[in-house]
Length: 166
Image (cartoon, rainbow, N blue to C red; front, side, top):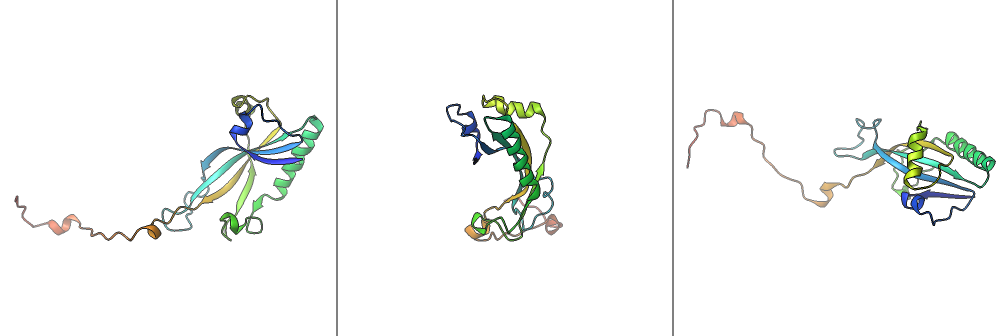
């Protein structure tokens, strides 16, 4: 059995043979995380928090094998629905306090069919889920540039002064 993270190019390449049995993960949408919008962990601008929408698809020559593979993959993601520091490696840029949770989501048959129609492949047995909350750290602008020094003045400082045109 083969496991692969795939992109739209792989799906759309009809000449690309699918080695069966195979389980693929296709990232089909990235959305701002509604659950982390107001929970910045650092000073502005802070990390960008996103939800990753995946489609887990099984490829097999036999329907029974497809169903068994899908059931096994769903069970594994259900049993291991939180990825924390025991799974997320610092080599990948993950911090010790970060975690990613896996949640099944409802996706209509029409929406799923459109994904496969777009890449001209027949609809396959698939399971949609979301990896929530993935934080993408931003570059620290202060480390690259010296601090900006500015003076703020408000209009109260100018009251009572005469205006001159020079």
